[in-house]
Each structure stands twice: as structure tokens, then as C-alpha cells.
Length: 174
Image 1 (cartoon, one colour):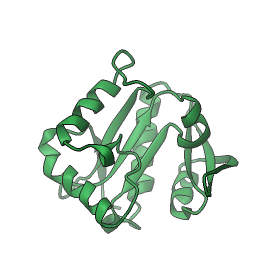
Image 2 (cartoon, helix red, strand yellow):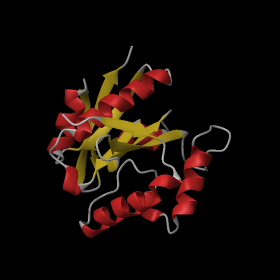
Image 3 (cartoon, helix red, strand yellow):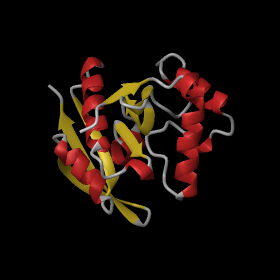
């Protein structure tokens, strides 16, 4: 398996972040775990939101404190995915979104990157003193369910969400 690392987004990765976003748009994919990158008109606004949402004191209305990371392939310093760790849950996240959201660019899927990124993110969760985390996925997203289960996820239940079903998995960290 190719080595990955999680790093906080910086302007050094500006072009790659925009390429990442554009690849998802081109493929009509959902930019999960990117802390609103899909809706950011200017990248500077996204960076400002990341900074605000990193602290309980400055988190934006309706959101929870979160840490967003780029999943970087070490051998070529390329962004292969993004992952967002929400340090607490609001009502919506408890039901549908969970503590962790992530995505892998289409051109880099089926290489084990999601499983490794989630493993690394769970280590970050331990550093944040989270005892357990909730991770959700669409019932139709079998690859994501396998990723979660492969990292110790235990299915608690399934809940209807719109036209689909959300699966809710818990991972104990302590």
C-alpha cells in the first residue's frame, strides 16, 4: 500500500485543491468530507471557513468545530482524498452525518486510500480525546460501508433520508 499522510490544507495546495474540486464536479460526485468546498465560490472563503470552524469560539452558526485534512500520497505529494473530523455532534450529524466525512477522487478509488485515510483520522480522533465516533454512509455506498467496517465500525441502525437509507456505524476508540 502506498503511504498516505493527513495534513491541514494550506495555500501551497491551492491548485491541487481546485483540481480535486473540479474532478468531483466533472464526475457529478459528492464532495463529502471537504467542509463545504463544493459551495465555496472563492478558495480564500473556504480557507477562512476552515479557520473559523476549527475553534469552538469561532465556529460558524449551525456548524460544529471540525478539523479538515487533505489525504496526501507521500510518494508524489498528490491529494487523493479529503477527510473532515467533527469534534461533536449536533442533531443532524447524530442522525445522518456523523463525526467523520470523507471522499476520494474518482481517479484514485479502489486503491485502499479511503480505508487508510479513515485509519489515520481515527488516530487524530484519539488525540482529540473522542471516546467513540459515528460514521455514516448511504446504504447504496458499499465501498464506504466496507471502509468503515474495515476500521472497526459496528452498524447501529439504518434511517431513511430522502429517497435513500443512511447507515450509522460507531467505532469505539478507547
